[in-house]
Image (cartoon, rainbow, N blue to C red; front, side, top):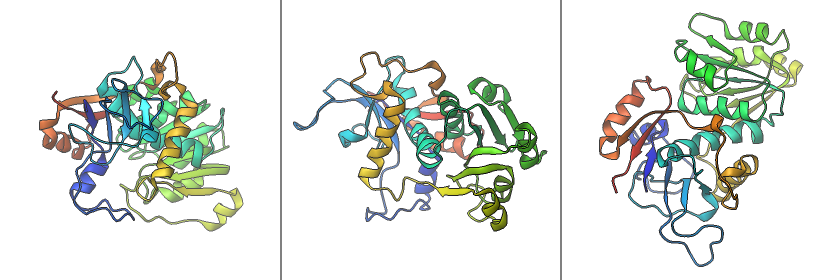
Length: 303
């Protein structure tokens, strides 16, 4: 292990609020996505060999060594550091699964990313732009990070503390509405999402930091023929998680081990807010709790 990223799920798990349907013990090491170097492979594993630089999602990533199923491994691009690799995995897996598998986003469609200044929000913007979104609207509650969001691909930032999101979304899309909405906030945004969605729009519920309940206009849902889909990794089997990895590798070949020149596109480079020694995990969690980080917080493992 060389690096592990910090995720909000780590805080929830630390506080006993991150539950799944598995029978795993209640007390587990924290950490979800990591990057490092392979030191040993099983005799039946193909595609990877000791010495390969890789990144992966794994339970208990705050560690010096981890064991992971080979189907969950992604090749670390040669132009990325271990810190960038650790920062990329969960964000891009979540974003790709939401955009492509759940929302079936097609090139040329309009996309909204709520909480766009969050680490995974930034990665969703990057991936949506890379995969051909024609117009990307981002939202935040403060309007901060405007320059960074413009740089990674946001065309219009809506500060929801001072502007009506649905009205602005319809104005920006010339009344057509949004084809895909990635909601990392939840709660009271549901009515606005329905109002802002295009006919046959897809609303993907990913996060619930703003609450787990919202009011649904069933008439608008039917009239617009909308889809509302919830996604999470907590209730997925090992095989389902592996499918997410394979789908991501299909659309970003540089993550595959058989790619000859695995240099990642510059527009997909993860945004790093700060890299810290893993001995400063408490401080890293404090930074996340303060909601001031623009980009990923990553822990470097001393070798």
